[in-house]
Image (tube, rainbow, N blue to C red; front, side):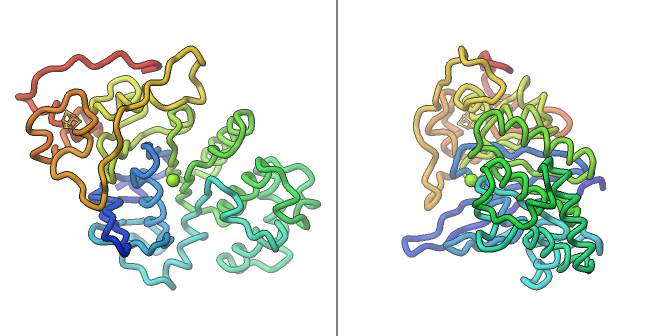
Length: 340
Ligand code: SF4
Ligand code: MG
């Protein structure tokens, strides 16, 4: 089908002692082979939980997959990640899917040398000899632009700068040549110059390896730099998705409009004024029955609080869940959006 990953109607909740948080509420999207899909949205919108669920990393408190499927084309054909045993996931994670996090220290073991950490995966998943694994680890460090890679092999994470650690984590995630790389806010903790370098690096590695990337970010500048398609998440749902051009120049959902005006962009000039979206996202212990954005939306109509909007097709793969796209809805003027 050309798709490496298909997430269908995924629902994930967290059970806490005060109730159940519905973090992911029916998310559907696909990732094509060799493409970069960005998932954008404010913190708490469910983007990280979606990513962790694809990797079957169990955040705490423990999350529960309530419904849906995650079809992944692995080396043994298409599997449903939601149905894999922990043991089966161990051979997929690290080998066929890699993940990089905002904070490299989440992924790096502070008590192990860089060399040992990179070769560990190679020894486990690829059956290389120690010598071959060492050679390949040095190659990976070179590939991610680390100078004196042989010397770095014997160093510990704390001996490296933040940017270097991020490069090491990318080397680790890519060392087994996974088909899918999930990058959760990979540059957020870095200063602007290093951010640009890491984005350049990820772009060039993506081109070299042909891996697909799910890029999770709140930074639309990073999206513009790297992604081909974008899924916009709000309150545990995908409210709009389309190509980068569609989301930047022809977005249809009022939340996407707000996002364009409210979030800082790596590539924007400083004279653009940021306008925060008033209000807060809904309580996911008891989500509203209608549109989750209704309480903050300047265009809300009576149907919006009554009924969940359907996904309306705008064109091709561009869709948005907003009643304004209903043929009988009043026509509203799409606001002028900086950069879009
Ligand atoms: Fe606003 Fe209604 Fe569209 Fe929701 S469905 S974004 S409340 S206009
Ligand atoms: Mg997050």
